Image 1 (cartoon, rainbow, N blue to C red):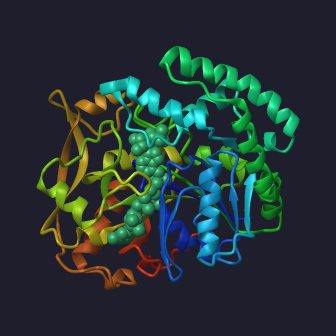
Image 2 (image 1 turned 180 degrees about the horizontal axis):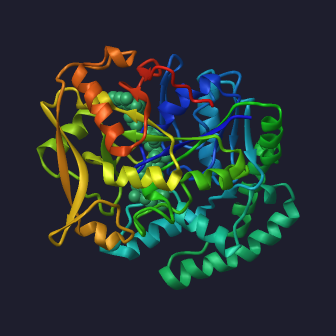
Image 3 (image 1 turned 135 degrees about the horizontal axis):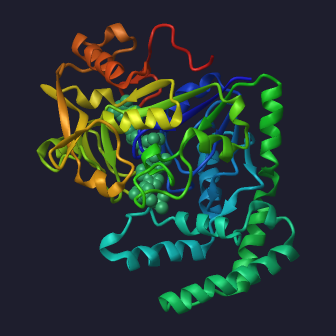
Length: 430
Ligand code: GDP
Ligand code: IMO
Ligand code: MG
């Protein structure tokens, strides 16, 4: 019953889609457990290049069952488009299941995301405007709609009537925005319910059966640890639990079942949206990284803020998640730098700090302390084993293992599935 979680270690976009697509070659089940269509997971494999927003990145293997777990907030329009797009490109969608416990992102959530961001003005979070925050607010306020609510049309109508009264009051009274009509909303969601009903299951039961049958399961994270609602740089975070603890909740599996936690880290740092990022480079080097790596958001197209790897933040992520291995991506982006920097500590008000501060206000005042490492100035994109890498690139990886006290099991040297190095003896499965 091996079960592993693949978790973003930074502020998202670490290459989780690439790593899950690689690891899923030997998986029976892949389950997305958090976030919603704010995520954009890029997969490049022999079938082409794909940008996944809701569907697990294991969908390309005919043997893998793919589950959207209860922790995911679903935009049903985006889900249906994604299913159609993949089907049109020849991907079998018969293996996709959706938890009946998933919450639904409704049109009023998207409106409220936009209005709340506008209201925040200079304090805006820089959300993806996909309705994520307002949907999870309703989940906690116990006025959300779940996939299971779509199966009983009379109940859906009663519940939507009740909810819409509250949502419309907020739209009108707080924001002066026009209210939404019940009837078209009700019709649309009845229609979505009919179209999606074959996929909607008690997926927690499916997961349990799979584990009892000894199947190999991957829990696919979205966003990253530093965007986690509790452990991220609050309030500049998303609204779900993106960590290994969240993986168990969002997939509906017991924490006792989790065998391994793989942390995905880029060889440098990026962040999209607002909030502190101590190693951000606002200079020419940051621009070079962004251009070389095409660091523009998969979901929103926004330029990503770029900087050197921050190992203080990475050590924190490793600790919060209990990561036992690192999947290090985008090593090739560093190929042409004559020398590289790695953030190894912070300085705040003349004092040195070697841990990630619990307060975002403190983090904003931290300036990074760097260790400089020699660059290798050779292409790594063709390397397929650790020994194929230039010795300085090997040294870079080994330096990270030393600083982070965590082994690097996988190294990615390009976006394609093939451009992946597994360290000698490393397997995703225990
Ligand atoms: P995710 O959200 O964590 O799945 O990451 P994204 O897909 O948003 O962003 C990662 C980007 O890096 C995508 O464009 C990937 O195709 C690309 N990528 C992943 N691994 C590598 C790598 O090792 N090298 C390069 N050059 N690109 C990579
Ligand atoms: P993947 O899975 C990068 C960021 C947004 C914003 C903050 C809150 O592709 O790594 P939200 O719309 O969630 O309320 O926005 O979180 N964010 C991401 N950044 N990658 C993601 O997903 C993200 N999902 C949300 O940019 O700063
Ligand atoms: Mg992404």
